[in-house]
Image 1: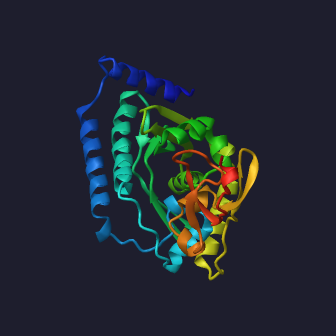
Image 2 (image 1 turned 90 degrees about the horizontal axis):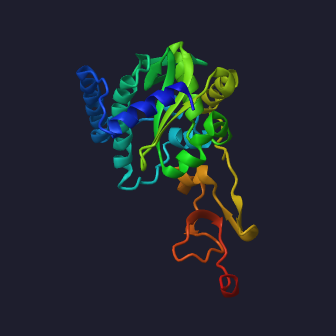
Image 3 (image 1 turned 90 degrees about the vertical axis):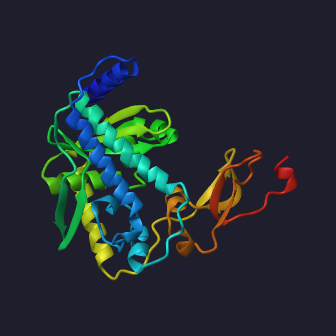
Length: 293
């Protein structure tokens, strides 16, 4: 556990037990303005310019998804609760900044609008918070992601960075001319908080910058569309079911219907559960009666 995380947990422990913590009224006012700005952003989405452009927040996404967006493919409709998730993230970011300051962290900046030139293309973004002149991103996540992904630290994230958090952070640092700090992660169900510390060496920043440059080159060119992933063989109880299903990256993609027009959302092959998990399949065989007994 890092010193930053220890200090934050200590402050949260005091607040949870009705003990006094020094908080400036100015911090509360700033958090209120931050959340109001978040509300404006979320509530007036339909009035904003939503045309495709490369930005810090999408630099690390799969290039096939970016190609789909650039081509003007129609994304699938988001579930009704999507906007609540987005607002929750904005609210968490606002009050976490107050808690961070109350914990005595050396906040040196934040909400900095930054930009950088990559092969003639201007990439813009706005970071979350800067501590000791290092940039940190605040993230909210599910209990599963908190336990199985974030607790493993930066090394675990490097193995599966589906949402492109690493290129986003590296981009913020390079564009802002400051160091890489890490992520402040909040479990939105339990309220647990983890501070994932990292740096340029751990993330191999030069390699990430090269990845960013390659992405920019591909998306700004007229390169033909190419899927980044193949369907995966499905196993149930270590035995193949005969099905092929889309991996997590494709399953979460808003353009899977265009990329995989024959994909079906079906219950997990071989499962006997009353309410089985569902996945997207490119090949699905109905289980025989004797297989599900």
